[in-house]
Length: 424
Image (cartoon, rainbow, N blue to C red; front, side, top):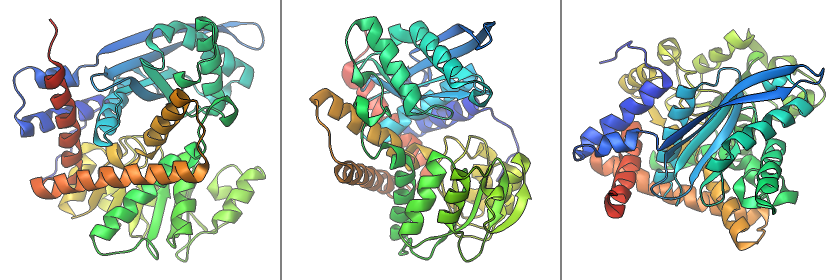
């Protein structure tokens, strides 16, 4: 039975964790301990614009859970970032590291602004001021940020430098996703997309199917969606639809990704301007049209809350792999469950990124550098191990994959809380 009740991202995250806690029959107070963020800092970020004027932004850093290890989570720059969104994303990171069985906690950070409207010099000043305000939260054994929406390796380099300047020595391990020249890991750019494709292949294998020949539609053609498209196509899948802020394009025989990439490199503003495939819908409001395309697999790889009641009802795919964080609303989840659609949730499906970040931390701690094949192979090994653990638990407990993943993550965190005890 579906419901049209609307939940914010934070309400949805808390609802799912509490549902898992009830299923586990956690003792009094423990679920509240797991739901509540360990610490939150909200900061003002004054800085100079290029014209010399003073401006002010607001940012956040949230440590949701640090029971199992240092806080881990990205920093996003986006004009819709707010406190509740950052908390919700931090909860997701805690579950993600627990499901992947990584010795890390969950964190997230963000600054509310649109980086497309600022120069590189202004973004550097914003980043350095933001880091100076949250530096007490950061450290290789305390909190290790990574790139997220609106940030990249260059931003991570500025974070590393600002933190290192404060402590008096180079500290590569304070961030992951940084440039290779500063101790970054090979394979990091493709890791999240690689994990999404591997999640699809592993689920299909359980259904007795192969990735080759599967028709895939992808929302979002940024870092995650682009690599997911490339890697899936390399394994024989047909990318029949892609959408971004310019709209949605479709070709039943598979889109020519090389032509799309070349057109974007040459200045095309989005997939609809690449001259490849048929334009189904234009503009940002046309991006959700990708979910209604005739295909076998949908990969939402853009932002959260992308799939609402309307998109869920229109969806023809039988398998959804969440490349973005929280792309399905709780109502969409229920509708797809009623339709018999299999959903592999974000807390597992997009864990390739944090898995590779963990490997980057390992390299930094050991002062080693692994080649790209080693990193990619290790990411796949860890993703496969986590999938078997997650899938076996879902099968044995007879729970839907979303709830099974959340229950497994909450149980892992709860067990750690019990073993460490409560002080005082």
